[in-house]
Picture 1: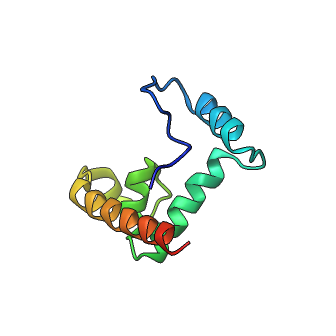
Picture 2: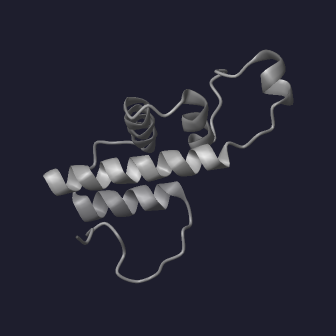
Length: 100
């Protein structure tokens, strides 16, 4: 399955605003924000059972779910957990595409 949102030729990424404008132009859907995409991404991960600290690591965000001493001293990046979460998300996404 090909995705019409993906460029046909390589391009350089030069900011979220430009990417958002390109997607809006190609889809004709204008009533959305990048924040809504992040929220949807986090919500889907939560529904798949991804732990909140792994979701936050993917979004490069901190809500304070890890606090106190752990927040100060824990410098673990959760990369293996993020990889597993990305794989689960991809499987969910492609299964969704197949079903629709």
